[in-house]
Image 1 (cartoon, each protein chain N blue to C red):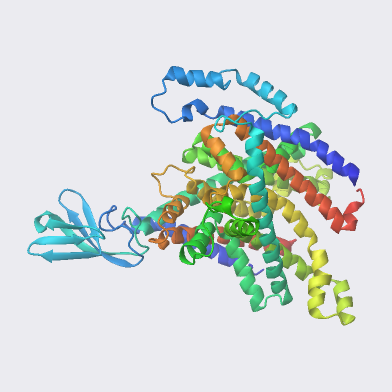
Image 2 (image 1 turned 90 degrees about the vertical axis):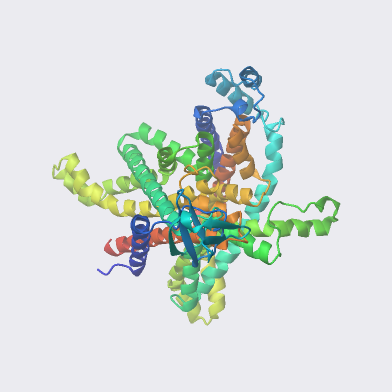
Length: 314
Length: 322
């Protein structure tokens, strides 16, 4: 059967983003290490000259003149004069996505922020998958009391606005990356638990599973051979959509300053940073925003595509 | 019908209690207390201890929980640490702006979603449909806080059409009734549009699918055979049954409206529930956190209930007890 076109588009988007974020920082070293005096807020595509000084500093500026053995490094407000003796090396580079308020190269930061966003969303989705699967299976197989207790808890948690819960927990605990994964996972497994429980309960009444039971197949074998393969498709679809939501949730927390520590780059924090200087640096919030949107849309397309494939084969 | 509503209202009580208890556990498990968030280096540890005692934070958690629960049962939500006012008064002030914002957002959500969906369903897989699909997919993936920044940049900073933050202008109190209303609506426009656009994407996607579904049904064929014009077919005959799932979606989008508005309220400095809850969490203002949670949860559950009731009103089949 031909794979739906949106599935391919989504996969293409994910592959490009993941490859860029994983491989990008390896082959692309940042231009300078942040020169707030001469290189702050340069628009995308600016050609700059990078001067490595003997004292370890790096100066970056779009305009550098050599005058009588002295380099004149022009900044927006100030011009610095450096003796040619102090310059160890000089080369030209391009700031493909511009620079931020601190004169840092945006593109490598964007890619490294993407690594963190992707990792947190993927791990958070994995935690949600494990907890949701566990609770869903327990509710479906544990008898009426267990089922009632678990499902009422799920109801209560679902009645709570997810993002509010996330913001509350993050504001109270100020989590690091590990705890953030746990928090994201533990606040988003409820829909999955419901889905698993519903699937198992409906599968149980299907004739092929009853036939297997009548034929004396061992319970473990029924689970691994009949239940799990039939749970795979809805779980995969649900998890891709959930990952999209987690990407957005993580970005929102970072935007509010409640996500991962500010020392690490993250898309949400980059957008918050860019919005402080929106008129002077539109590119600062534009590119992380586009990255998040592309990632979420790709995941949604994959989820949609998986559903179409599932419908077609059902 | 009445009995079902009554039963659901009764079920609300344990649900709200469960959420409140969970919140209580989370709040008390968190490090730090209100006394630690007061940013004054001259406060000695002894004074901070006194403040803790003053707010009853030195008592065992179970005792605090039981006394809080007892007070809530009599309708007393306690006193906010930050505002030094009854929690109910703080929330009563914050609820109307949030309801106004959510209502206006729902309006944009429905109107834009409806227009996009009907435009797309008119000719499935035509160019309008393609553009609408891409547009609604794009809106689905856009982070709301980024969209907010974009809207502020274009409509507020560059064009200067709408104010970028707050609910009223500084001189609003001196204005007469009509200019005041206009002032409020201008402040409302951007945050409501921002929340509504994100919702409209989902509404349009669902509604388009159901509209296309309904269009291929037999009663539509019969109506078309009777010579009813195409536009009436779409807007009246197909839209009515297609709107049914939208009612459910509206109920489901309530938590998103409440929580999405935390971010939007922060960006636009909108004095609503989201801002109150956010500030309360940052200040460890336990009574206010619990109060806001309680009200927010009840609002969400009631919203879902209202959606179910509304569903029964628009769809006679759902009225029969199953």
